[in-house]
Amino acid sequence: MNKAELITKIAESGKMTKKEAEVALNAFKEAVMGALEAGDKVQLVGFGTFEVRERAAREGRNPRTKETIQIPASKVPVFKPGKDFKGLVNKPVPKKKSKKK
Image (cartoon, rainbow, N blue to C red; front, side, top):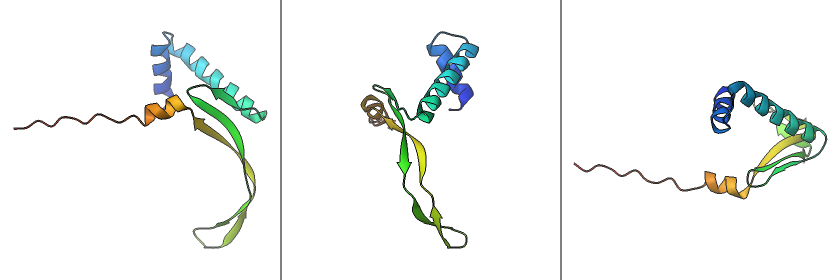
């Protein structure tokens, strides 16, 4: 699903126009990105948590030249899905019944 399709889904389920849905989606993105930039985490119970984690410096390898390189420490945004979200994604898919001839 791309951004336009997501906006359409939000508009349909939220009973709003696509323009209003786009404004809401952009506001959500800006709020989450702003909170992470400020060092906060965003917790949405049942959905998941957005946070920033520290990634330690490490040794890597250039795949083209096989040369060893140093990868510096960095901060990375991560999303940890909540229990309800994980349960929904891991729900078994019902098997289709085959037609016997």
